[in-house]
Image 1 (cartoon, rainbow, N blue to C red):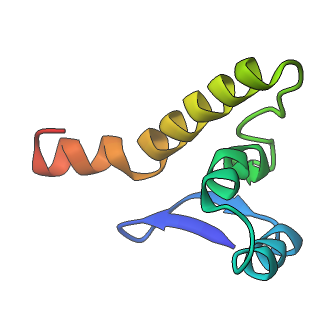
Image 2: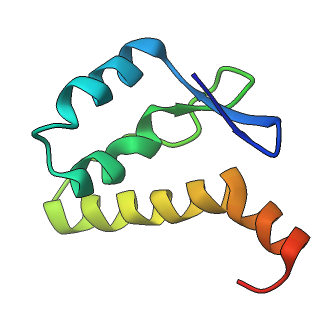
Image 3: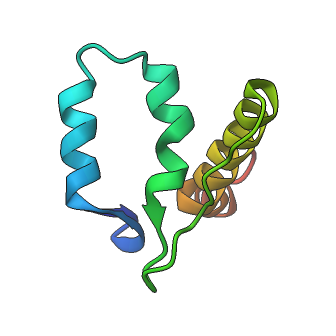
Length: 87
């Protein structure tokens, strides 16, 4: 599934993962789904956009949330703020 902004493709998710999101959404904590999303995002070139983290839970969660923020910046927030100003 392509993730686009203003008609421009920015990233994609593999179909298997998108299906898994749909299946688990009804019972999984949404914070966990959001936190883990970036490690399943691919650049249009086919490379992973973000790595998968391991280690202690606090360090992993911190890195995952940094990736979530970066992902949103790169997906739409940078273009949105440059188009409409402000943040």
